[in-house]
Length: 208
Image 1 (tube, rainbow, N blue to C red):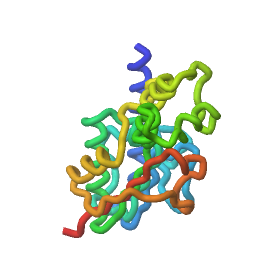
Image 2 (spheres, rainbow, N blue to C red):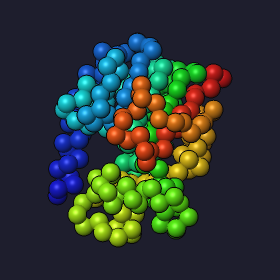
Image 3 (cartoon, rainbow, N blue to C red):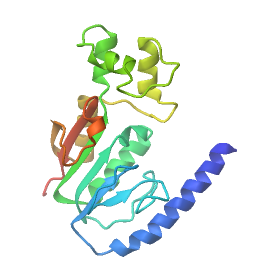
Image 4 (tube, rainbow, N blue to C red):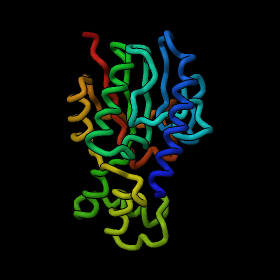
């Protein structure tokens, strides 16, 4: 019953966002910040399933933007919250559609390679130490390395899938993106508190 109630709330927020998005019909050169949370960007359309966002949209649905209307799409610590493969691949197909040829998609997700290497004892140990030192927020029940691994994967059931570069590269290629590259932290785009521990990837929609 609780899940049904949540879905009704999300549906209503999405419908409200769809109506508001009509103001962007026929426009081009849009810049979209998907799953923005509190990290809004000036001059961008900040999108989240929240009444505080400029547009409240459900990323599991068709997005209300014209084909080839967007010059850049940015998403930081949101993509891992989509169920894989159905919702995640739908999200990529939709935003590939609205991205203009030669447009950029930049995504940041928790880098799962780091915790796995540390747990196996072949990493540099930074990730586990950052967890223990609360550099990454962790609930008090996280005591052991496996506790921290579980929280990374699940985050109280909010995380739906884990990514490394190979996995993101594969699904971006399947969608049609090219020039897929792992990126360094960009202070002009990325959130400072997420500089370490985040995998940033950029890809381009081909011109033909």
